[in-house]
Image (cartoon, rainbow, N blue to C red; front, side):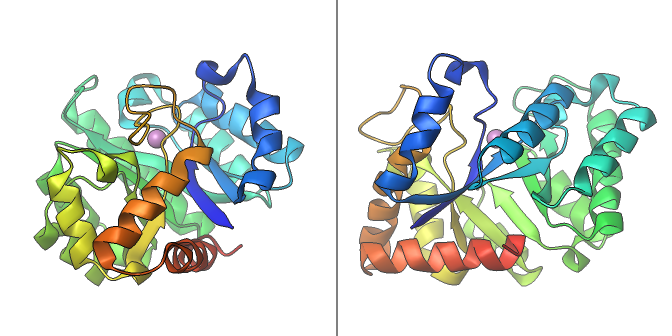
Length: 254
Ligand code: NI
């Protein structure tokens, strides 16, 4: 069974058929799903989804685009949610200089603060990093993020940086981009990194793989991602599915 490590089923894109879709997952080989909160509303909705579905687990954290109005009071709420049994990670947290919605210093402050939360609660982190390669790695090194575990979600940087993250004990999240014609850089990373360091993820509703590129993404399409990884690495589809599942179970202690 496929372990989906990053989806946003709380997103309004699923308002019309969320239950119908989630009920289909098991019959189509999707064993477990981590729903990742990105805003305060998102983490509350994530917690509710974990209560409703036995196979849905949650990550709670505030995405760098959403940290502008965050307060210490909100951090208390996050910490309390981290105490729930099915909340298995702090995320997604990090830096986003692509959309660049918040001042960099503010993004950095809350990235560090949420890493502290992960340290306090002994949970792994799910890192979002876009167009912020150097600052992300610098901060994670300065904060001794190697003492935490985690995943660099939607990995989009170089092989050399991938090596640095793997040396720190981090996994690389691989999704739809690996199937894109212009996904050459990620294909090279996938070829280079041992399968023991890869996780399957969609980032649904975003980043649907070929042949659904541009459409609404969902965990059912992870078969295309796993097939592409299998081709790149010259291993069987089953090996990709089973190894990435074991990686996720180990990281999130499920
Ligand atoms: Ni995401």
